[in-house]
Image 1 (cartoon, rainbow, N blue to C red):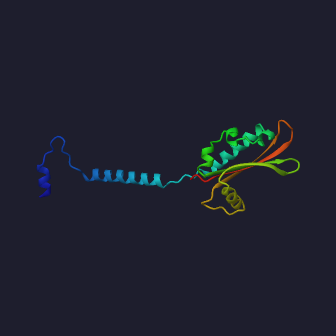
Image 2: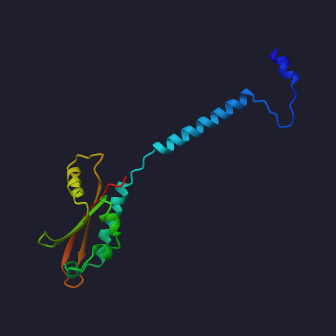
Image 3: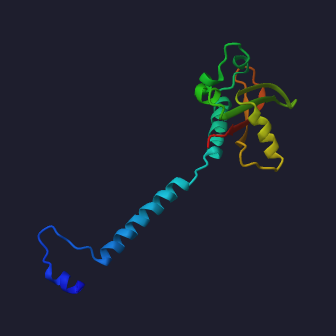
Length: 167
């Protein structure tokens, strides 16, 4: 009876019957879209290591090329302006940290140190450096460079630690 009903119907322009193949194709397209959206929103990108490396290299490059130790000790010295680092991103967000230590050679003693950001990250970096990585701790980067003071000629070993917890 159903076959007789379908044969007696004639398609008028614009009237289309859904075939099982058309429903199957729509179902495949719908499922593909849902899977694609779920994959996109479940994929996590962790850029903390790259950000920590960039911050460490920025601070090292800043002082390795033009080290002036007397300028560093002046009260109006601003590391953010000198190294062209966004102070708001470091200080206000509490997601970054850096410390650069100037070690005078050949005495091997820290003569001066500059830092910025959340100082708790330095302790967390030291903890992870001992071989106990934590998932929720910041990612840390370390760097070292040698530089000579352009006025006095003294040599310094520059050690930097940088951390990022921007997920």
